Image (cartoon, rainbow, N blue to C red; front, side):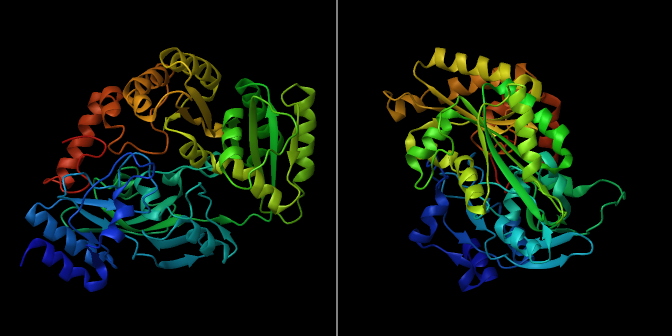
Length: 469
């Protein structure tokens, strides 16, 4: 029996596909930058099936690409173009195994979407706080593999901070079962950390236990104009002082970004009468049913206006208004995609360095590519910016994308010079592999490769992601 036939036998007739129509959307990266090929799509329905698949692939040297919701932007989950990688999706591992409201934990399988996790927590009057634009499609396994962040990192942390336990299958087929919901477990190496942010290169996460929090009883959202990124930072400091740990999100948006969303996204509108160079979208929440948050934001706005930090703003009075404000932020990537070609940078910096970075990087990019349109936005509260560059209006797509490497190096040189990171939350995948090799500490890279060789001696799992071995 051939290897492919053995794999088909493991998952049964519902667990595999060679249908071109079913494969097509899984073989292309979200922005259409990469297209891959595969001889077979596997859809295992249990950890045992994943284990059996990996044992056969290990014995035969068959390579596997692992895919969650295929919402990544660094080409980590799309198979390469060799036509030799088996594509494995965890979409059938979609069970919520347990919600322990008393322990404030939830255990779910890797194919569960982030939205489904949020809803399962909400049904028990709890909150799963991870929130990002792709939450309706991205999966638990994917956000663990990329150590996703999102808009609530300021208060709740990244995925690494939210993870308590993990179940993963090693490339050899062995299963690591560490689904404890314990906050304290000091029994040697914290093995689960190996799989967080590893982009599926060290094992396949099949289930996880995550932290829950008290469900918010009240939420208030505001949209303010600010004259500069420095004013936004000053507003952040004021907001943290005035609202404490109620501050859950603090997003910076440039005017160009707002205009792109209004132009390309149906139903999006400008919430303020007069345009401004920069905007801040902030949100506060409380688990106390007796606390009124709108007065806090109104008081914050009054103080900020007195100090010259804001000139205009609005506080959402209804859930519909709140969703309208968030639409401006969450639709930015889609609006850029619809507008033109763009070169994206997912970077993080010390907060104090952000104003100078925006000036330096913007000037450097526009000097190299006249007419280039920087569209910076992101999670200012935790120092994570999406410094995206849209093509000049008069430049053809291919000509602009030919400058990809040059623009990356310009931006990333400045990021590293200012003490930042070239990947804050998207990961490395294949897209940023050369950049990682250029900037990452050589000893750290050697340790990563040693881990890969130890756990995946035949290099069958997500080969060519993060680095080459």
